[in-house]
Length: 139
Image 1 (cartoon, one colour):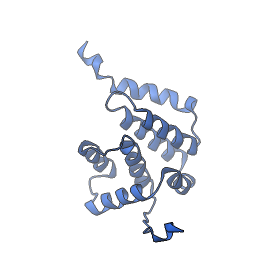
Image 2: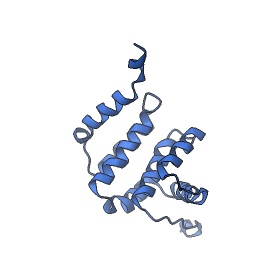
Image 3: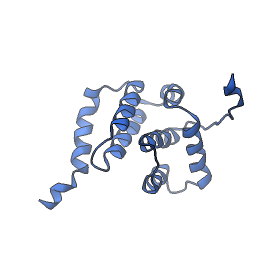
Image 4: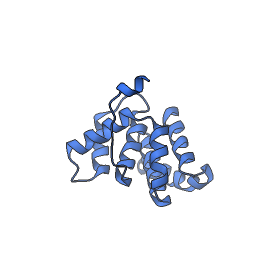
């Protein structure tokens, strides 16, 4: 009943907006959204993104729980768009060297909703781990 007082936040769930919302969930899963993460988000949204577009995506992510988002977005995304979103989430989570447990749990939730198994993702995951292991450059 009290949900009636909650303002409705709408966002056109284009594939790019779905990627941005997914990354916000992933980046904020540790409880905070760092300025570097917002910068990364802007680059994902594209060069011509306005502050209003970024604000709209952030408002939507704050007002919508991941299961509700997934129920609305997943049916409208093609398999290659789903894979792109998951891989960007994994890459974002691994950027600092290790995905936090909250990030891992969220990524698995998205993977299941998108119909991707752990076996489907394993080769991509290995590639992203190799990409982010910059310690090999110092050996």
